[in-house]
Image (cartoon, rainbow, N blue to C red):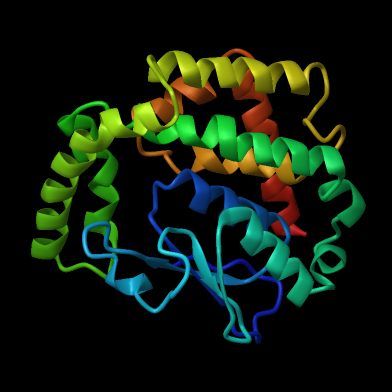
Length: 247
């Protein structure tokens, strides 16, 4: 489990996730930057038994807020948290108007539709890649070792089998090409600025950053962070987040 440190005495929200899910990780990056406490709950990718309580939303991420309300979807969770924790941006020293500007929301939506959807098919191109991607299961305290190994093996086969369907869903002929087309669009938007948001990261910076931070154990992470334009931007966001958490 991972917690950020805004209010140690407050009950943190529960975030139901897959550790490598780009949408889950963009949510966590925003919550971290806003210093909103949360506890991650790993969902079994085969049974999804942990989220059966959710009546209307059947994917991850799903959040259960401190008041008990259930919210599904990365952007929806961040919005719900900010509505229920009205002082969160101020408490974290974040300019809410900048962080949630119209442009920040536009590029956050772009992340959902153009960038995040490209990450998953780029880590599931073969059974061996899927096996590697699911390695996190063996580090999850929620799973016994036999269960983790069985889930990892069955999940790897299932993910590889679904790879073509994911590409078809998002009209991708070449998943690597689609990803780096999105990278080019993003780095062009950042341009010569420190961040897409300008001098400080905004919601969109944290969204794109989170998608890649969440796959730090996988080869694609190194490829992305070594990219001549994307890599320096990524490191600046990482440093800004580290500084924010240290405040």
